Image (tube, rainbow, N blue to C red):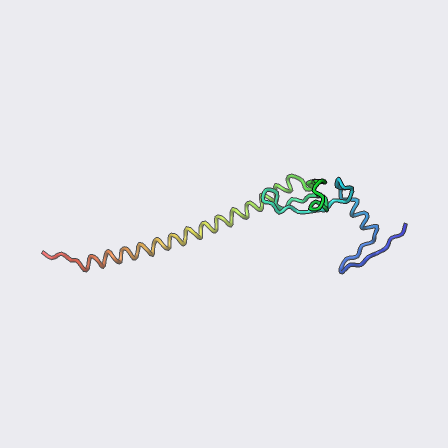
Amino acid sequence: MTSSSTNTGSSSWTSREKDKASVDMPLCYCGIPSKLRISGKNNSFGRRFYNCPNYKINKQCRFFEWIDLENEQNSCCKMTLELAQRRNERLFHEHVTKEQAKYKAMEKKVWAKVQNYGQTFTITT
């Protein structure tokens, strides 16, 4: 068996390595090696899956297979959710702090006007 080598940029593959890599990928219903992808949707963000490389062209194939374990996905999602919750809590705290500062500034203005009003209208008997 002969093997040719190909050098593309910083990585080189032999044809035998390419064949081995494609064997590890499950075949889609079209009979070709599926493509590894990573989900970007909210409910499955970061999960890895295989699907037909021609899914946009041949919508009849519909091959789809998750490849990561459920707990991998859960830990990834949990970490993403925790980061989002921390960010939201920080943003909420910043918002509350700003609103409190606005309230205190408004309160000072009102008291200044009340004191000014009291000085202008003094009642003498």
